[in-house]
Image (cartoon, rainbow, N blue to C red):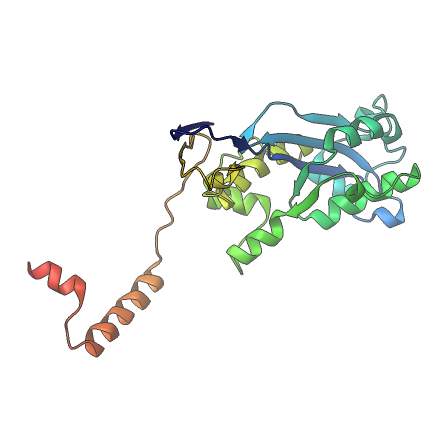
Length: 253
């Protein structure tokens, strides 16, 4: 990120380091309280809305088989997991990695519940005691697109994000897709990354040059129903104004 400063006096500017971790898990089933376990954790790091490549990913031996329905979702077999580490072997590495970050998860209650169950087995505090905060993109999407397809596949389709490699669910792949979805859900927030620490008295002016290369901006066209409703509203406005509406005046000039 670049910034410019125009001032005759010395001014100090602070760049916020916003560290976010996009996280996903795969599990043996749907119920952590009944003994289902995590078999994969995938984390993707983003700092100031740029992917860093500093990701964290592990397959885990759950010491049990996956339910048949879960196996159809993730395709990770018991045989594949036999030589993988158990959660206890990577727990400290995981907690160090997520320490203090904003954790972003799609359907956070599910993943956080499983992480807490794994940590509880080791007598560790809940994961929320280690991270800065947890953000649920499913909640965000439902607020932005009520009644629409707001699963990860649906959001990828809405934002025209390529998910062709998602034959099965995979924690790291899904975390990467979620990062792209999040950028689209929150485009326009880049300006929040810079703060003047002590500039008000100097009269300094700051300009920010943003890099939008990593953000895909889809064109969302109005439906026929929406266009018809809009036309009806315009007719009503024109009627109530006695025909003196801006768009009509401009078309006549």
